Length: 239
Ligand code: DC
Image 1 (cartoon, rainbow, N blue to C red):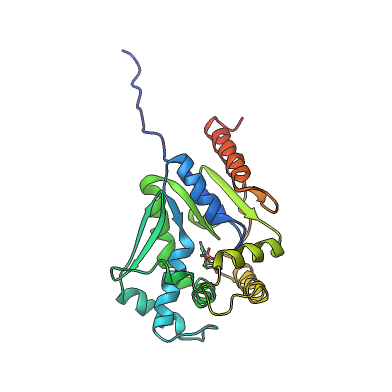
Image 2 (spheres, rainbow, N blue to C red):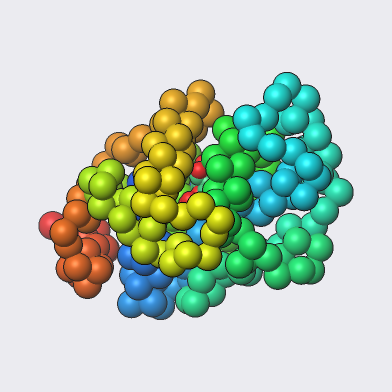
């Protein structure tokens, strides 16, 4: 009798991209996802959505004791829908599209504060895993390689010099916020870096086995080609 061969469909490609704000994660993740034909999953948008709930409730950073319980109530009281596709991540709160509102400077600082709360991470991490398991994807954040998808096909840590990161963020904001001078952007970045790397809960760090890419002075396509090469290498058995 011939041996029984079980053919499993190939596991979906999952790429985890972590790194500080301004390292180029979003642009690289979007382009890489398009080239691989998988969704681009922006987990920062999910923390930003929780931040928006908190801001709308009148909370301001730094968060005092008691805020975590209140934010837990807010998450329970509102529906948070995340739609992912090759064109990016859309976030809806109670059916309202809020993707644009999530980009304000206030929301950035509040997102950094709420993302340090265990209750928030406990609620969002399983949602992120499910999104990845569904169709694969290029998922970007701060703890994707360390916590959310430690078994991703490829783990990437993107970084860039603080000055270059601030310049990129300043250019991307393009005057759509209240105080978006380069100095203000640099200062906000310093505060967020400190919060994101020093927090007790899933701090930003390089996951074991990550490919580390410093994007300072590199063109987008150079980074994407390098990562496509890494994905191909892993899928070929790591040669
Ligand atoms: O990537 P971003 O700037 O949109 O993220 C917003 C905030 O959320 C940022 O301060 C870090 C935090 N974050 C996180 O803690 N874990 C993630 N997986 C994604 C974002």
